Length: 125
Image (cartoon, rainbow, N blue to C red; front, side, top):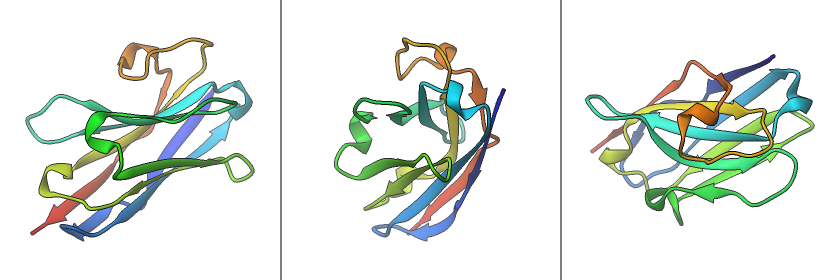
């Protein structure tokens, strides 16, 4: 069992940056990857970025490429999502999720086994 807890959300002015974190606990050695999703009011949940927990490259959704950076600290069991040049469209609840199986598709929710509660990010004009 793995538990995930997001932190660092809040209100930020458009154009600025914000870093949110996902704290992992439990059997983190069983994880294969951690992904970030977001859901805005009235919209479907969408994939943002993912980080393989053992080896491999990060993966970003199109809107996140070049603006967002996902990174991990295995000693601290943290996965951070640095978000730059934020726009009003980035307002959403951001959630991290863990994968324990060997193969996955980043965007597909069914591959994720563990979820955090989410943290609200609000971008203001």
